[in-house]
Length: 354
Image (cartoon, rainbow, N blue to C red):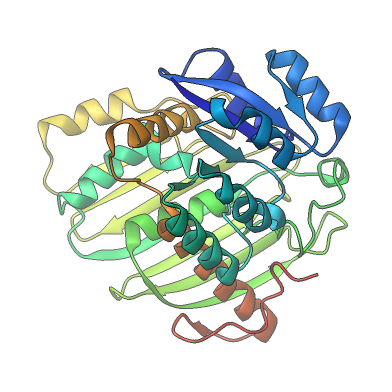
């Protein structure tokens, strides 16, 4: 039995706790929770019937024998500090997206976990959505042939009430804007499908909320393969979420996955059809009940399998670093108003700065 402790009892923690406590993850259970806000920690502890703490060091010292994995679910700008402290206890670490807000912090996290001989898992649950898995299988089989264009769209609703829930939301130091937060998973998917990026050109604005960071932005990418890409991201949709999607266009075919959480196949068309294509179109057009999709369950099952069997991590610290490197370039382009190469340091990115 792999025992998990949660650090941070905010919005996303409920998703993790529900899966772990309700025995939906075979071979795993929730062992303890921690939050610096005593009322949150107590509420979670009592709801899920586990010990609760307001100090993660105290939790790890008391629960050390009974914890195998620590999930870091704190504000993004605190991920690096918390992972670096927790790594000293020698337990595997799961960290929510984005893994950090600067590449230098990500490098320190990867290095520390390597030194301690522990796994660093970065939560990218949308990679486990079945339509996304099918898209990746088609890509690996070469069915798209010459890639032309990759696009992701995040059209969600986050009003002022959402940002007012916590003082860190919408800040450069602890959160970032729509690119860093809500579009993080989609940017990861685009990189996973399209490969390395050569350059980016980005624009953004803050239109409907009072925050430091952007609520809307667009990015044009040039991939090393020569293909182009587009990222469209906004939390200014009103009155409710519209879509989270990815589309790939190649000389051999076109696939678009939409829905609220990249979980509904809208178009699946290839020049050379196979008998399985009909089944894919029929069986993977299911829209999930919320923006988290169905991937967290499969993701946590993957974590358990990697620990138990030694299977390679699908999203390790090094893999999670890739999207962060692109985010820094996006913000550099926004600040300079220029096309930015991925090959040079990005010095004007405000992400992670106080």
